[in-house]
Structures are given as C-alpha cells and as structure tokens.
Length: 214
Image (cartoon, rainbow, N blue to C red; front, side, top):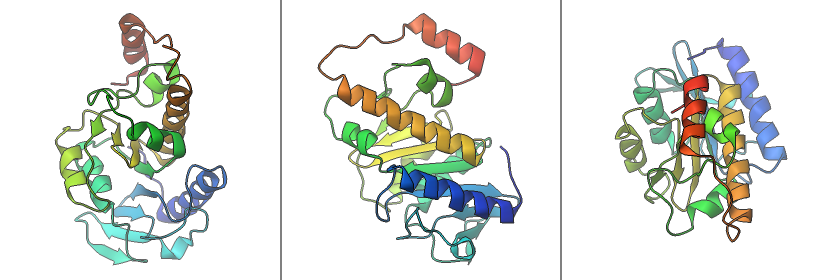
C-alpha cells in the first residue's frame, strides 16, 4: 500500500475523478472513489459528481470507519471498507458504473468465478481474475460481506447489474486498472458473436508469475 499526505491525496482524488468523468467513465453522480491516508480514509461524498469535487468537502473517516469531517460519505462505503480490511496492500478503491462493464454485468451466463476472460495481457497484469458478485441494491451492507468472503484474494469484482470495483496499491494504479477493466469489457461486448481468441492457461500463468497478479 502507498499512502500520501492528506492534502496531496485530496488534490489527486479531485484530479483523477475529474479525468474519469470528462472521459465518460462516470456520469451524473454515479461512482465513488476512496484513498487511504495515514490516519484513515478519504472517500467521495454521497450524491457527488466525480467531475466537480471540492477538496474540503471530500469525506474523511478514521481507521474505525467513523465519519470525522467533510460531507456525508458515499452510501457504498461498505464495499470500500471491505477491500481495505481484507487486502492490506490496498491504497485506493475505484467503483464505477462505466458503460461497457455495466453492460457486461447485465448479461446472462457469465462465469461467476472469472467473468472477464483474458483477452489481452494487460487485463491479466493490471486487474487479475474478476469474480461476478450477485445483485444487491446500492448501499446494501451485503456488498461488503460478499467482498469480505473473498478473503482478499481478488483485486477487482464485477457487481451484477451495477458496475465494477477495483483496488490497487495507490490511487493512480487503481484508476488505471479500472480503465483497463472497462476497455476489456468493451472488447468483450464488441466481440460477443465472434468467438475471440483468449490467452491460454500457460500464457496467463506466465503473466501471473512475472507480474504478480492473481
């Protein structure tokens, strides 16, 4: 996990959130992002727009999950906390309702244990295996329970009929991984009728061994 000082973390959260919004990875008030700081957690406020965050208004929680400053935190704080609790290496969590990943999450017959086939080496290197979690309403604490049940074994999940949640050691890496996941979902949707060539088990194993993904 990589932590930065709080002022820098707030500025980076605003900058990267705006970048995601301006490039269409988030619309309206959809999505939420958090980043770990030395004495707690910063997270985008509930019903806030990723394109127009105000640094002082970003919610701050202490290490026990208590809201101590800023606006009211996102109602989906549970899924963020679950990743931080089960993955000590997590320094940031990005939850998006990006178009193609959300479209993919609505399709039937996805493999619940590995719903993002290894189309490219980059999704294997930056994201790893992605389980599909069953639908629950936004803000339901059951989201956190399902992520905890993974025991920290996965860095990303696809929420059925909802979107993606991705974690990494720092905020920039988490944003990059979320973007990679969305682009892979786009490829999967575009190639649905074409039976695309997938990386072999041996090729995936080599990537895991070299780049340390899982």
